[in-house]
Image (cartoon, rainbow, N blue to C red; front, side):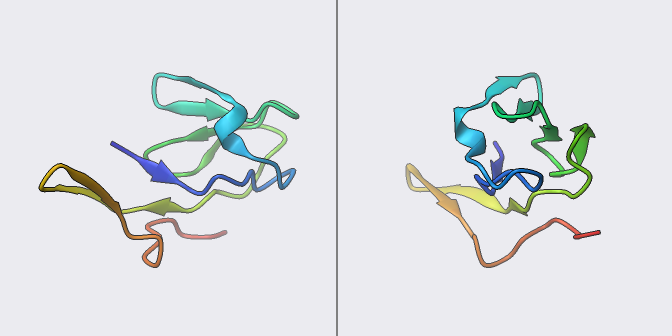
Length: 74
């Protein structure tokens, strides 16, 4: 299970409207692709990662710690 920031680091648009395949999400606007595990761009034109957040399941709830990004910004 993965949680990433919903905003593309290239175009500042919602990634949740893009396509997910395997462990990648593709931005619908310009086709930038990001690895859901690391947030790193895997396809241009994006060159900066998107934040990835820790996720845990607790008592049937999915908890995302948006205050603790696991991504190293470059």
